[in-house]
Image 1 (cartoon, helix red, strand yellow):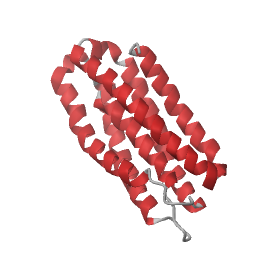
Image 2 (cartoon, rainbow, N blue to C red):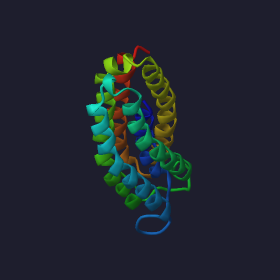
Image 3 (spheres, rainbow, N blue to C red):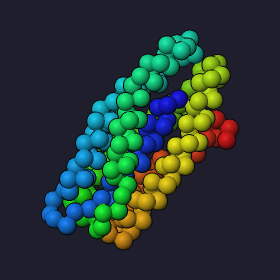
Length: 188
């Protein structure tokens, strides 16, 4: 449901921190802010994965609300981070890029896991028709948003720190594959 959007947005804004720069040595204040948002959300992902894993249609609305109540504040953090991070401030420093890669790395497997679980739980969502429709809308909406942000990141990295492009591309590929599977499972 809304988790999918959160997972994707976490990835998108996490990678978008590559577009933020600093002329000085070390990690820029902007990237530090982005990394702090990523870290805060990363702490919530295991709880969401646990709720998705244990979710069945028998949980009904109450089970969905448990997930929603965790996802909603994360979505607010993601929107703030997206606004702050996907802005071109100039040249991306090596320290900034490495910092973001180090912060994002553990998030990728959690996002892929969440999308995989959401795909595996389709039958449970199908038993609650509204839940399936919401899941489909969220997947569609955030797929396009994620693509826009990953394009922003790749463009920034390709000019400032091209050595990080293979890492970014690998992360994007993992997310894209999880998206493709979820879209296939949900029939769009």
